[in-house]
Length: 345
Image 1 (spheres, one colour):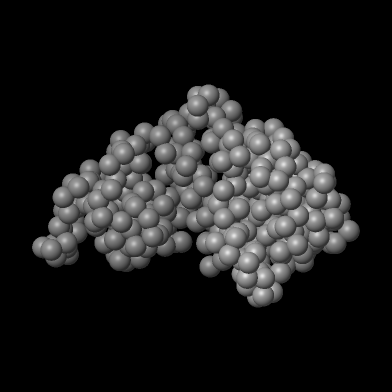
Image 2 (cartoon, helix red, strand yellow):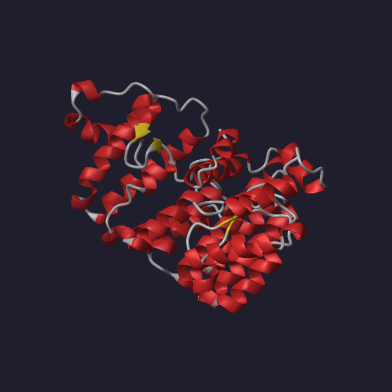
């Protein structure tokens, strides 16, 4: 189950690559045909009018019955849903409340289809269809994404690593106004792949690569730090974190308490040499000392360093700063420093 959850997270990322792709196959059943199969099961008050809402009803019904279908039919119907969902992602008017997919807590899209995959018994048949599509349209993003999904589902590691460069080439050759987001998406793919299939050292190396790419491409988003202490030990983790804190990127540590504590300690001890205000490390109670050091070092009202001006002009990290403000406010309340707490309100 954990493996499937991680795959879903990865597919959520790679679906971004597919946002503007056109639907591939031409031999699948028309949506009207699929709709007619299940129309009798939809109650009158469930009838939808918009195309996204209609598709959602079909997807919901498919989730109910796919396990009872023969594998070839389940694959055929699922691929039809995949194609139709891609057509919807190019529209800007997916705002119909009836098209909100409660299964994924979001509007209908490719993630809705991925959340409706047929049972594992049909995945081999799905893989065959995906390979055939990729052969017919080797430059089609949709076909590449679909094939990649089936490689993940069947845990075909050699094929997975072979496919990754294809996405890198697509990202690097995309239009200038889209290149950064495409490259960022591929970087996230790589990180998730190493998390799923890499060794401890490879996960740490992937983090270092993400840092270097962030510095080079200036995505303007924090880099998630894995549990480095748990992965490579305290000594190596400290060296890597110390090196990372000297770069103009912002960090966030979603898991690994020992790694969080170490990063905060290093940031505080080397506050004068930080290139970025690490508000993402002020993510718990008891971090008031780091917060105050960051304010003194980076707050434009206190100092006019180049780093603070860059952050102010770009609007970067506003949400991390807001979260840090909340933790500092709570720390002040707990410490009985009411005046300081009121200034943070």
